Length: 562
Ligand code: 5AD
Ligand code: SF4
Image (cartoon, rainbow, N blue to C red; front, side, top):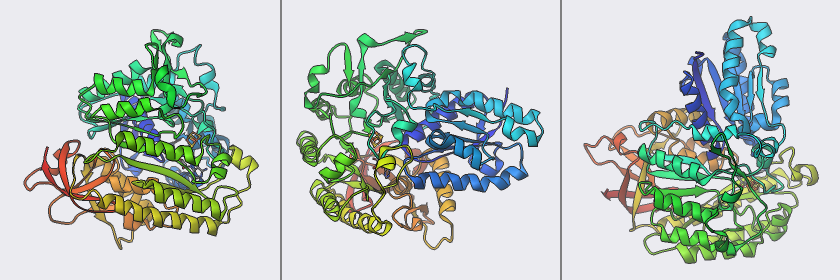
């Protein structure tokens, strides 16, 4: 059996984190082991993101650094997985001869075979000839191959999710479960429909079964994943099975708006129905969350299920992208600002309750082609009114292959993008601060995520070293990135000129161990572990914490019970 030590690094979104976990499970089952030390690895895999150029640049520079390692260790196998591989495969191979394996996000089920081949060929061939001839490639080539053949052939990618290895010891109380893959929206700036392909929905039985197996292994919190989760829809009358396995189903064009309740029948599972079933059928999941919600087609049926299900979190991440109707049209978002704000008001009317506030967050792109000061002011106005818990702000990054790249010149100058970006950030920071302070005095159930780290100042470490350190700590402490660095990575990725050193965290040198966790509104909470208690054992538990003070980055509290 082929074997080797693998260093796997994940860039980008939660979908990628889940893909990496599944890949890790599949490769472990074939005898590979994993190491957090890239120097000790026989195989280096990067699971990449393509959503912004900045995310891609990180991977390019990592690959550049590998040239020397590969010269010293010719048997080293290097694989690029995920969206960058899919979007830019040919160029990657041309510019980066160190790359042996390319595997798009829709082909990850093939990775074990590709890796076995690469390792075997590498061992058999002299180093010079090995490079070109041993290269292993699996890309969709176009977004639709898999979905086009979906009805006729077994969807092997589904098998990767289905055969997920779940062990009681390798989670930190929290897990992701995919409900849909891909996206059909084609927002004009976005590369996702091209890299992850057309939308498909997993059969509800598969999803519920996965939730149950996770709960049986001790997972308390499940986050359902999809690019537009509220479009989830499975029509049982049209279900197909291959070799006894129900197949995922292609997404259809969405027509309904609020009146989706009527669609929920015996033969159709909508998102509302799916949420209700998971909540009711797997009650040992104490927290059920989902990302990402699309602002259109979010029916009252979903809000009612959330309201009536105590274990569903009071947190919605609903990207708005811009507060300007003109820009919304140019982005092909399919809703107006008034419709978006109507949705926020409706969500608050259903879900905001004393002592259990509804928390909302969003994404904004600043400097989209043609954006004027008036458009920017409209976005500022929206942030003032909407009072998001937090907002991830991104400078527009033209992505090859998208409609905006082909048809809309990137005409907002860099300095204007930067100025608008900082204005939005400053405004949101003061709002986040106020939203946090309003929680003082409340007591929350807090899911403990990790040992908190204090800011690493004047460390002299580079951004890359800090990131790697944060990753390594997360790996050994909680199996996932600590809350603050996660928030930092997603929110700025170094893009708005922030100094990573003031965000990333290091172990507190002395004193009580500080823990970090989240409320069910997704607010980060810091609190001290009780004296004499092994802090690491609290990770993955849910504790009652009373909030005593707060600022924009989180709440500080004391444990009052569990
Ligand atoms: N430029 C900047 N931000 C983008 N996003 C997606 N594509 C781009 C792009 N080309 C942002 C959107 C999305 C988030 C995941 O990334 O805000 O919601
Ligand atoms: Fe991209 Fe729009 Fe789909 Fe989100 S909904 S993944 S922004 S195309």
